[in-house]
Length: 520
Image 1 (cartoon, rainbow, N blue to C red):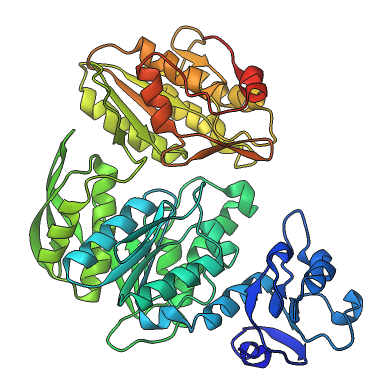
Image 2 (cartoon, helix red, strand yellow; image 1 turned 135 degrees about the vertical axis):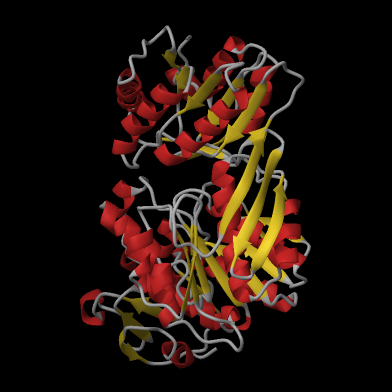
């Protein structure tokens, strides 16, 4: 493509100069090849403008910048485009490079604090059951035809170049529909810029990522941008613009309902004036049975997923699919096929006489619903033992909140590491412990601080008795744990399996485990 062709697609372009034949696009100077456009993205710690000389030395044919060209002292003949937001420009450039694949797909976006991945998978399964060729991008994987591709170590939306590449692969494979899990970080960092959404779905907005976004209001607004984008997204024949809202969620409903949209579908369990709901709900450790009621009709649902929170996720996915015109039969068939999401209330069975579960719950609300589900299962016949941590360089307030939730709902509590990053793990544990003590818990009696996560899981299973539940929360499907600035291999599921056999998962370097290994 010509650089001058790419200019025309970028919103908020301020000025440009020159032209060149472009062979690729990147914001990483180390990835530049001859003929590439280098997009200088200002980062949290490093400003991409500093790497323009390195990009030019590697053969960059043009640059996209936010700072004035005169300040940057660019070579006189260098083609450039100055924009108001380089991250946003990067997304649009990747979209244009791949021929705007989202404009050839009915595109669903699923956002929220908890339940995004499960809802994304449910919606994907319903679309497949309806006979659509569908693709999916979640924080766990991307589904393109028969392919399943890993999307990363930690839970966030892939970079904009990967998103557009996946969407283009879906189109090439014949897909007509796609579902994108849309995280607040991905939305705020413009990783979904250039995606033309048709149906926006929210699960809930609860306490999480406040530090990363600067405030609760900024976090909520990051989620809201998905819904605001419907007004300007490209129209597609026969595909409505729909907002799917959760009436039960005070953190999102009123705020998102105020955003104008062509059509709105409201779901909920505990609130009046909803379009889609469920009644006659039966919960067992083996799954859910319920009656779905909607303007499109009534149907009986069965799902191998567990817990009340998953009924809400099912309603969110069903609402989005029904709004598109999918049949009730496809909804019931699709819901029944989703047997479990990696790291979401995932059972680990090594023949032990108690239940062991790994769950991704890493927010106060998610921890609460996981513990309530576990309490429902034990039904007074056993104890709930929970192991969890709280990430460093994230919302500090949630640490004591999560401790308080555990103090209220769990019988035995083990506090441990969960991506401490560059913060003091001991300080994080102390903040969580304060919340636990709010419910009269005593360290060494019914709660423990065990910094080494492998040792913490081992301690939990060694305390477990028949009919108990050991719940390992916070890491779920993730394949790494961050100490300092380094991501070390870590899998909670494998660690719990090792613990059930009396061992620990030793994938962390010795200097890390020695620093945090404390006997219970």
